[in-house]
Amino acid sequence: MEKSTYFPFHKLWCSEGHFNNDQCLFVEGLVKEHQPKYCLETGFCTGRSALAVLNSSDQIKKFTSIDRNFDYRESGMEKERDFAYSK
Picture 1 (cartoon, rainbow, N blue to C red):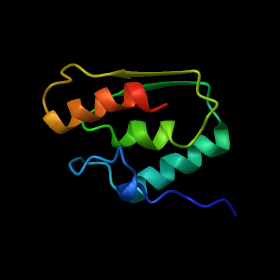
Picture 2 (cartoon, rainbow, N blue to C red; picture 1 turned 135 degrees about the vertical axis):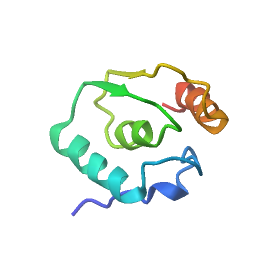
Picture 3 (cartoon, one colour; picture 1 turned 135 degrees about the horizontal axis):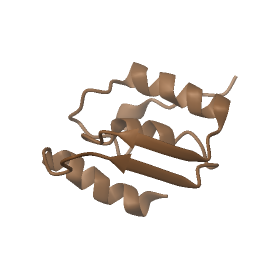
């Protein structure tokens, strides 16, 4: 059986956010099972769900995150900048 990530120890895991590790593990499993090439995320917040998706597959060609206001949480802004350089 493939080992799952414990996301709070990942370098891009933000200490703030609504998406917990169990939810990340669920999304990780879905991504590994379905191997999407294109992903659309609505609502970035602090990037936890984006981390779960992007960390779970190297088959993703394009990941798009749409949010009406990317600056509502500074810790999310920091992680959003980190994502651009992490893959």
